Image (tube, rainbow, N blue to C red; front, side):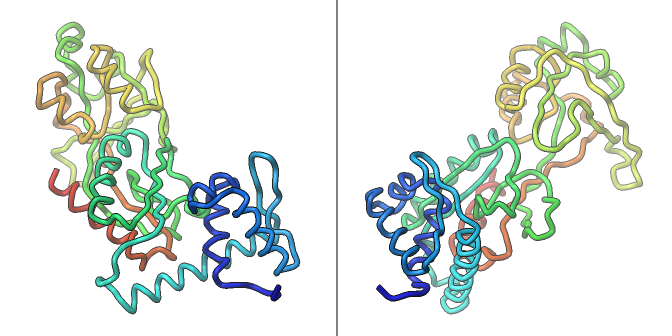
Length: 305
C-alpha cells in the first residue's frame, strides 16, 4: 500500500469527524460500519499515525487527527471555491449542508422552508440542528446558521435576511383582569413571562419611545418580574395565550395571534432593540453553491411573509 495522503480520503475523513461515531458515519455515507472502520484503518496505515481514538459508542480525534481534519476541510473548501469560480451560477447545488437555527424559529420557519428547498434541489442533503444558542463558528458544527442579531465573531460572514422586531403582547382576558400598562414602568406591577435564551441579560427589558427613535433616543431599562420562565419561545407564547401574563416576543412569532385577536399588541409607542434575522457562515463557505442557494431561498421566502 502506497504511503502518504490520498486526496480521495479527505472528504471521507471530514464526514467521519462530523458524524461523531463510526455508526453515524456509516449511515451518512450509505455503507456499513465495518467498511468505515476498514477505510479509516487503511488511511491510518498509509499515514503511519493514528487519527482517531475509538470506543464502543463514541470516537475522538487524536492531535494528529485534528491537524489532518483542519487541513482536509481547508482543502475541500478551496476546491469548492474553485468550482464556484469556474462554473458560477451554472453549478447545481449538491452535497451535505449542515444548518443551525434557534428552537422556535427553526421549527416554525426554517424547517418548512428546508422542505421546500430540497424539493427544488434534491441533490442537497440537509442536516438541521436546532439549539437555544448559536454554536461558535470556530467549532465548525454547521455550514450556515440562521440567528437573531449580528454575531459577535468577526471571523463570520453575516448576511441580513429579514428585519425583525420584538413587541409586547398579552391576552385580552389578562388585560381585562389586570389592566393595560401605559408606560414601560407600569410593567413592574404585572406578571411578565420570562425567556432565558442566548447571552441576553435575563429579566431586563429595554425600551425607547418610538417618537424619538432617530433622535438620540433615551432608553429605559425595566427589571421585570413573573412566576413563569422558560427557554422555549413556543411555551412562552402558549402561556400568554393562557392569560398568564405579558410577553416580549419576536413579531413573527405572535403576528398570527394578534391578527386573530387572541393576543393584543401593547405599548405600541415604545420599541425594544430589534432582533433582525441573519444568515451566518464562515469565510470558507462564502463561495459554496449550496450555502448561497439556501440563503437566497430563505431570504426570498421571508421577504414575502
